[in-house]
Length: 244
Image (cartoon, rainbow, N blue to C red):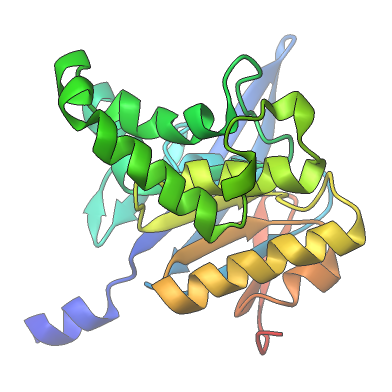
């Protein structure tokens, strides 16, 4: 029985999540009991109209925001109620994040941007001892996303597709188990967006990386293993799709 339970426990689960924000003197409900479960190695798209709660659900699952009601579970253990230090550790070790607008630091080179999560992971002394290892890890990840020739360039010197590839390298340099992607192709033309999707699918297939991706683009969503639809903060349908 214990073995069966272990096999069926999802890697990450959001259970009955409700979340509201205060706007002026009013509470504005965004999520109304939404839930999502992802197994290891799954690639899931979350789709819905603007304001349906897609990004909020992603942020709650990645501990960037806290639910008003509900729980977030990692391998069956609740994590949304942990103390700040423990949540910070999980964000640095377990989750990787990519967003529509990249969020690369403009004053740093691409290599330095990708090194940042590992620099944060250790104390100053710890970083100093591991600095060569950290640099090599960042170089290896940039090579994996095809940007080894751009390591000294700053974000302003890169194209949109290159910046997003750099953001993906930064998200994955710490070897997370779960990648949370919020509109990763939303700021790119269709050709470059297709290249980013090819990269994400490759990472999912080759590394068994679990990916939960928010998108408004149905053609992008259809390339995932499974589509979850959000309408007014509630899960409406779950569609199984063949990966493209």
